[in-house]
Image 1 (cartoon, rainbow, N blue to C red):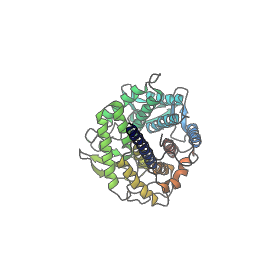
Image 2 (image 1 turned 90 degrees about the vertical axis):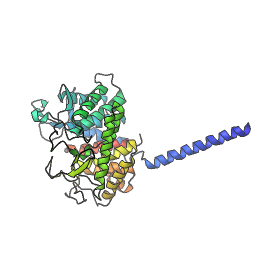
Image 3 (image 1 turned 180 degrees about the horizontal axis):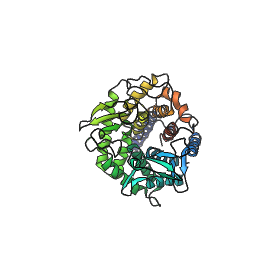
Image 4 (image 1 turned 90 degrees about the horizontal axis):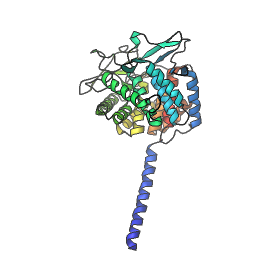
Length: 387
């Protein structure tokens, strides 16, 4: 009996050692913090961002996207604002009240009472924020961030208050599935307006948010979101393989059940950078690295590592590249550097971490909504590594 007792004791010790080794191995593969970035710094930047860009009143708030005297905002910005606020709350300094103010603004500016997609733009008219007829269509990226933020809010605060986050999220996701997902490719369209043959297969590459789609599938128990996640990852893998740099264009065309990819032309969709790694695609390192951070996807890790290898080869990350890796502009922009810095944190690329962590922690300009907001969301996401 004693011998049997000792055998059990030894077995228990072996299991404990194995567990300790497993934890150590896991720790070496997934960074648990952002070196040199304290929660105090993150909170300070959040307060600066909030002061610079949140506007509205006691009931509703929005993210100001312009520098003019009359305010303007976008559904993209509202998605960022809601995401930033709930992530800040999860880290101990974001306000539930502020999140509700942002949510009320989203609800107020849905396309209609029967369509919970958000109108893509509002401009100040007297003291009101309004959308004209052409602005009462959607931009998919904004709706996706809003839906994800509502899910995070439901997980943090529940849905028994004045605003039922769960109901809002599920209604929004149901409509996104009907109006913003291509029913052949199961990829996100650029908006609910993209119904013509020339627009329905256009994909904004930064909308391939595989981590979100996996979350949506689990949250709604709708297997169609799993298909969206799978096809998004397949498309990202294809695009990554097309160029040694691993860079992808702002927009591509993806068609058919076999997800055949083809290029767009400059100015075909939104800007002269449509066929380059521009101000939309610069978010890809963040979006794809997030899938590896939360889901440990090895496909996403490979895609991010390839992009990181390219950026290591550059003396500095500048704004806009051709897909072969030639810089188009000479200036730097935090919308390009901070997603790379965050991705480097996730895949433990020490060279890029050393170069660009300072961009994550830099003071806000407070006068340039897009790079400041990308900095804020990637800084917060870096702060959540390992949590």
